[in-house]
Structure formats: structure tokens, C-alpha cells
Image 1: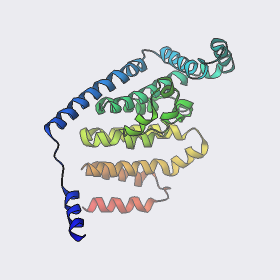
Image 2 (image 1 turned 30 degrees about the vertical axis):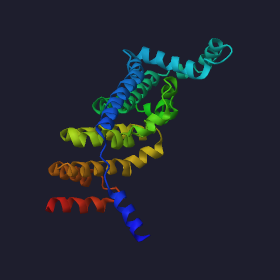
Image 3 (image 1 turned 90 degrees about the vertical axis):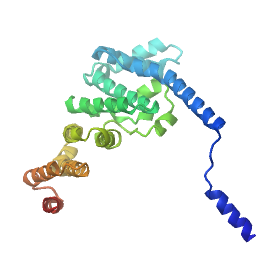
Image 4 (image 1 turned 60 degrees about the vertical axis):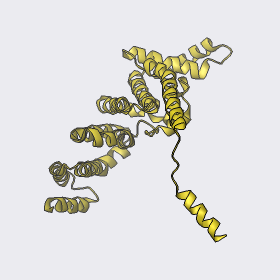
Length: 277
């Protein structure tokens, strides 16, 4: 009995070496899968790209029609009635901007599925920049409040939720710009383009301030603590990639501009620690 147990332990520690036939099969199957995935998702990637705000408004309306009305007995009539009841939504100036950002976000995830990370990151950066440069109330639009799996465009293009759960990106609401940044943008830039990180943090801070401005409570909280917390995170991020002087400069800014920050002592301690090293 003891000998059998010992043999089983030895077997469990052995590393199987695949045969040449198995390696060949896996290589061929992997190539075939990559081609099938590309053929499957590239049409949606191309269709998500539009040339004007009116084309993005048209994309939104097409998606609404297809997802909610196409299966009605009288789809055109039902859709017209919906448009009459929702004239404010249809004419909302945020609609084409939000649709463009939602489209870029979905494109990014489709590129992740295809294992094309650089293009995916460019899409996510487009989202962050769009929020940074967009109107203050942009993140309040429903497309930016929906999780990716439940979003209008994901349903319109019939993207299986299982793919999105496996792609490694942030699949929550776009309005949570900090989560989008930390999950889908920052890690790639830390590895590939660290010199750009300080500017990216500044973009995030502006985008986050606009998201916070949707309510007085959130705006006040951001002014007292949220802004400072992002700057602390920026300093830690710069320190992580070896940009110590820049990190100290950010901490100096915190000390000078945020005297009401509840954890002010933490800033002092980190500033003294970094300055002494």
C-alpha cells in the first residue's frame, strides 16, 4: 500500500511531454481558431466605426429597433411610438458621443478577444479621452451606466457574455472611469510606455471629476478626498515605474493644495519617506 502511494506521488510530479503529432494538431487548431474568431468578430469591429455624430445617432436607433422592437407584430409602428415618447432622449446632445464611446469600448473588448492588445488599449484610451473632453453630464447617459454584458450595443451585435468574461478587460460600467483605467489601460502602459503614465493620470483625474459632478454629494466628496486619493495613486504609480522625482512632485502638490484631506498625515509620511531615500 505504501509503495503504491509513493508511485502515485511520483507519477503526479512528472511533466508530460506532448508528441510531435499532438503539438502539430494544437498548432493547426490554434491557427484555425484564430482565423475563425477573426472572421466572426471583425465585421462587428468594422461596423462599430462611424464617421460622424449623426452616424452614431443612427447606430443607436438601429440598435434600439433591433433589440427591443424587431420581433413585435408591428415593429415599425411600435418603434415610431417609442421615438415620439422619447424625443428628449433621441435629440439629447450626449447620445452620439455616448454611443461613440460605447462603441469604442466594445471594440476594445473584441480586440482583446482576438488577442490584439495594442488596438484594444487604443480603444479604451479613446473612451477615457472622450469622457475627459466631453460634457460634464456625459457619464450620466445610460450607455455609460450599463455593464458591458447588459449594454445595448453588446445585445445588438449578439456578443456572447462568456467571451467578455474571459477577455481580461474591465466589463463594468464605463462611467466607473477609475476601474476602466486601472484594469484596461494602466497595466499596459506600465509595461510598454511608462513615460506616458503621468499624462494618463491627469486625464483620469479630469474624467473622474466630471463623473463626480453629476451630484452635489459626489462633487463635494471628490473635492475633499477623491481628487487627493487619485493624486496619491498617481504618486504611487510613478514611484512603481521608477519616476521618483515626479512622484515627490505630486506629493508636494498634495501637501500644498489639499489641507482638508482627511488622511493628510499619510501624505506627510509618504513625502518624508520618499524624500529621505
